[in-house]
Length: 112
Image (cartoon, rainbow, N blue to C red; front, side, top):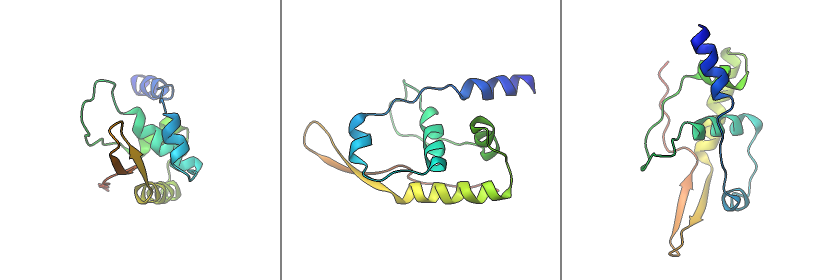
């Protein structure tokens, strides 16, 4: 239990770096809960990851890291936030002038 608490405390201080371009070009704001989900997911990406991959997380663990009570209402709220994030898209242009339509979340699978 103590090891798990240390891991949760450590994860609370993971750094996430956001590009100014990304912030300025996504013209909508995210709710606090959407930001928590997104930043938690982004914090799972390692600097040496070379390709897109799937990341799994446990909702209870997310609640623990974010200091949120884990209950049925929060489960529904997180599901709603994840859906909203998955529905939001934005354009990114690379240095060669190619434009890409991106979404915050590509696919979600919930294992009850």
